[in-house]
Image 1 (cartoon, rainbow over the protein chains, first blue to last red):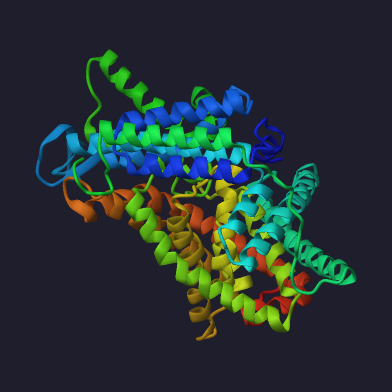
Image 2: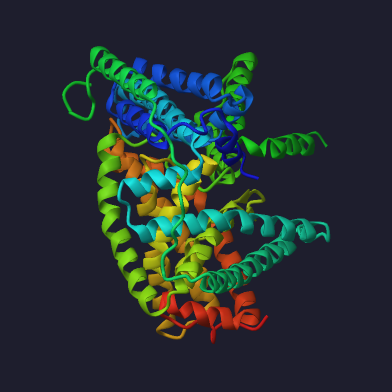
Amino acid sequence: MLRIDQYAYSNRLRFTHPVEKFAFAVITLIIGLAASSLITSLVITLLMAGVVILRAGIPMRFYLKLMSIPMSFLILGVLTIAVSFSGEPFSFLWGVKIWGFTLGVTAGGLQTAVNLFWKSLGAISCLYFLSLTTPMVQIISVLKRLKVPSLFIELMNLIYRYIFVLIETADKVYISQSSRCGYASIKTSYYSMAQLASNLFTKSYHNSQMLYTTLMARCYRGELNVLELPYAFSKKNVALVAFIDLGLVILALWTGGVLSAGGHS
Amino acid sequence: MYVNRSKMALLQKAQKPMLSAFFEGELSNKLAKKLGFALPPKTLLIFGVSFLLIWGNPSRAYAMHIMEGFLPLGWSVFWAIVTLPFIIMGLLSIGKTLKSHPETKMLLGLAGAFSFVLSALKIPSVTGSSSHPTGVGLGAVLFGPTAMSVLGCIVLIFQAILLAHGGLSTLGANTFSMAVVGPFVAYGVYKICQKPGAPFGLGVFLAAALGNLLTYVTTSLQLALAFPAEVGGFMASFVKFMGVFAVTQIPLAISEGLLTVVIFNLLVAYSKPELQALSLISSQNISSKGVKI
């Protein structure tokens, strides 16, 4: 169903302390965003790919496939930034004239676009490290430590649990609809899709009622408390994370400086 | 026959719309070189725009969340701070309802899961491609905009982590456009249409379509603010992003509006008691509305 979720539970870093993984992903992400050098982004992309494929044991093919998911947004967004238009021919590197407007590429736009492309790839690698090595239950436990309101946490737990129930329901409805030619034409597919959605809604409602009844039968007092698995901090891992991120900071400062500080670009 | 076949091939490429569009452009350039003459720019532009509208539609892959790392750090933090009050407001209002009706928590949990699954469904679009609904209009009318901002934020976290759509650093910006602006616009439009007694269907259609569209206008605004064009500044950049992310969204917004109307008609026809129970969180009763089908 959700392949990323499956790998999160079956990878080799599954039982590493969740805070270590979370910190590694988020700190590296922030370094990647704050750094303005192309090399830092490239190093982060490769580093994360290496850790995910070699250390966590995620198949390379799957990882590459994941990398292609945001490509449509990335290429579209980057192209939009690279291409500018103007009434008068500015300092375009290359351009075409249409109806008195010049549509073309400027040096600055191109530079921003290229930098952004690699920066986004680096950032998305950090996200993938987190989502491929850390099951949602662990991420939620980290958020709990970060003092996110308990209502938010409980809603997250409930939603996470029921996503799978509802996906399964929707899948079954979809299969039975399409095996009865429910998606044969646009008109029927609209109707089928609406039926699916409204049915799913009714089912969700009844599921919630049943859940409440079961919880009440088990002395529910307004809070959902679950036990967490105990994890041990590994000094080696903490040192490794600190070493790598320190190295990245030094690399970023050395090769390009900090973008967000507004100094040099 | 040949045209049909190439069309089919393009349809099969639907999984990677932008890649195919990219190579298509590359191909036409090569073709021009081989032919010895370049296509006139006007034709190229018209071709490109229609290509973007029909084949390169980004939303076919997924609803357009700003991807991880696309916004600079400053803007990510800015949008997170802007969004935070709405989330806190939503949590407080949910907390208040929970005191008198503790079962609402389960209902909200299921509502969130429902929104997530809904956004993973594919709806057929009027241009012949299919897209994913944002579910913004449906959620706002069913659950109310305050609850929707919290649910939307959680759904966006799950979409980022489980589906790789959106991201953690852009969570604030995405929550603002999809879980704050979209639902509030949809709800406002729905309420305004109620006043003069406009037909229920029209209100729902406009709420869903405008909720969807305004979400992407906000996304374009966020991108343009972060990346003002070198020539022409913010406005030029806004026009560019609007052209790419919002104009292409119009047919999809219409499809979502139509779908939402059909969903509501079915709900009103078959699920009146459930709708009545929902009035707890959305503080309105829609079970008596609707059109016979």
